[in-house]
Length: 114
Length: 115
Figure 1 (spheres, rainbow over the protein chains, first blue to last red):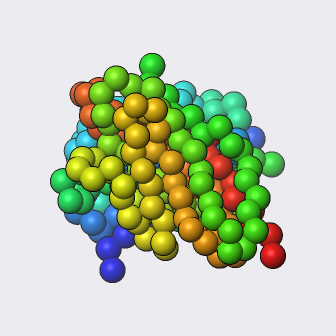
Figure 2 (figure 1 turned 90 degrees about the vertical axis):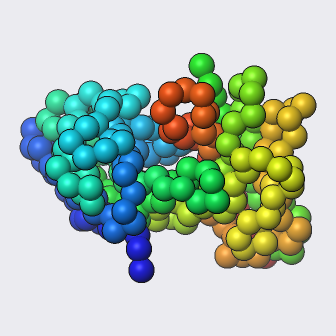
């Protein structure tokens, strides 16, 4: 079955360390996204990529970095510059469904900074 | 700036009762509209979407939503709630005229179902 796989499900990090969250999709979608979710704040866009080797900053890109070397993969690195990295991170890809763009989400990765 | 408002942070409904979750958006034209559901610790699942045509749309799990242009609203409804419907619900809007189609999400409404 097609879908989005995020790993790891849970991740603990010490302050000052960089961590990378994996996102892989087999839906053949061009566009991929990273969102951050905090209680009571909904989803906020970190980075997005419309095509391989291209990506754009979203609303809260500071302290994060991404790469898009393959269509299937869009890893997110949470750097030590991110002031408050503890959050739930969601990866998504966008494809056409009945003429409209529809987001498909992964199951998420929960990052906790100790 | 475009925005999506879900005025209710929490809603408690008795099992078997009807449900309506509110969503309002700010935009002059008609955007694409979506409702997603999220179970604890999980990703978001698409319930239904509206982009044109009949303003009453049917989704999965017995949910429906009605687009009302005059009120800039896209409220989600279910005639009879089941305990398994307890989750967080997000309204989202795709403002197609921004040059790149990306969703703006509301802050979510958490649904609690009482016995």
